[in-house]
Image (cartoon, rainbow, N blue to C red; front, side):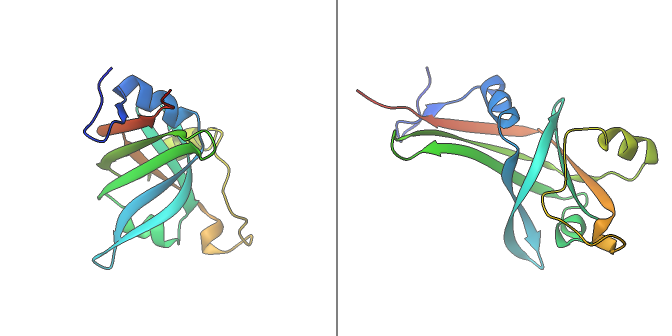
Length: 143
């Protein structure tokens, strides 16, 4: 078992991916007008990719087209003082091809917020984030 300098257990790539698959919510970190921005997103694991569904007119859809972003997901039990955190870094891409949009539409990934029908935001837009770099840590209870 590998431990970092803070005493946290370092997770393997396989453990990180397993934990990413266990929760549908994370925070995506991107650049918005030259400043760092963080936004909660729901996602689903699709092979070695994370897929995010958003509105086509959203700030997120515009900001992450073909850019390097990070996504962090975690789970913590404050009472038990246990938990984990996983971070993915990769080049996000907007899905533009109709056949891929159709395939992704069948993934178990519902919009997180309700949108008005007919609004530009109501149109589905998919962002794919390949798991290029992944790291994770686990906080375990110590006797």
